[in-house]
Length: 401
Image (tube, rainbow, N blue to C red; front, top):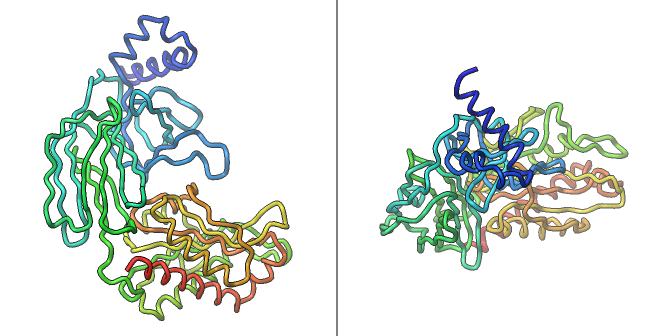
């Protein structure tokens, strides 16, 4: 066993015994170890993410944020398939073990300082660049009325003495900061438009880069790139009709293909994550969508419940800034005569997690309900469904002119 492996095993062993037992404070040697050293983890793999907790339902732990690779984390414990990491004095998170590589035991740095900012833009987007002395973990939230993007950088202490904003940043109204805790540095970015059109966060060396999409200058369908995801596929069949035994993957694709046709008729540039019975993981789909960089994403699914009386249409969003799209689509879908299951927020669906583009998950109806199932398998109803989704998108675009 190498010295690094021995250090890691010893550190985790001691923490596992004492940190959560209450004996930690009584043990001088462990207190000294914990105050002076930390077990370093580095994010790795495709789409590493943090969770608020370990999670117990089919969607897993509620996701806190996606992270860039090579972000430095302080590992404090292990639980099943996750490591527990200390983000700051008062904040912990969970990260899948597959998304972190243990690097060794290192001396703790008493603080990490922020430096000057630059706010500017290029032909495509606005960019906020914040210099740090380490690739620290972060979390973003969206706020509305007025529209803002708020990013918390964990473990950072302000030494930002100026923020330079250039006129090339045309979507950012204001950018400023607050030290909300001793080791939590908050970035506030106010936008000029009410709709948040997407943003990405990552590092360039040790500079945190927040890239913000601008509202398209022309918001008609013919000027936009729209991604459509037909859920499931291959051996992942999804729900099954209780009477006809129709498979959800097929219903999803049928509606998605109709939506593709009706959007193209209006001149939209459409990207389909699948055109046939392909089997794609959520990571495959997300990376594909990141590469395509659409203006918005519509995910098509059909619902199911153990209670066969449950019925109706529903739309889903993860971030409050993307809610308006899900509302206009739901309003149009209800014109089909379906029951209203509802508009569901904070939904922990994988394709609702990315912040790069507004997105909406549409659960057309319940395959577990006899009345809904009869409509879902009707090709004429599938066409009407696609038209209503298109009208919902157009309504949303009109609201954002």
